[in-house]
Length: 90
Image (cartoon, rainbow, N blue to C red):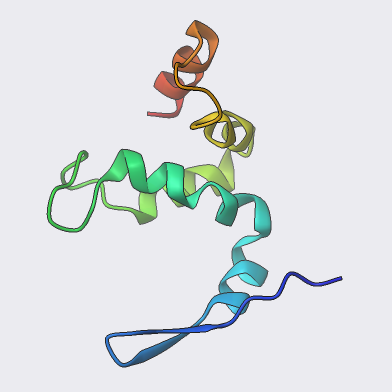
């Protein structure tokens, strides 16, 4: 069964979320919130001049970081192992 994604309207532009998921894959899309946490919002970037596309491209090349980022938010504290893996991603 396909995951139901819909069109979302942002600033008058319709974004076909399903086509993004089909192109990037469910695994990468599921960790986008974690990537957003690291890269910051549009006005306050935690990684100035690195952007948001770079981390996504890094994940596409190094899928071993998917499980690392998927663990973020599961527990109130990060284990030493998780912090080590996150530092490798950065």
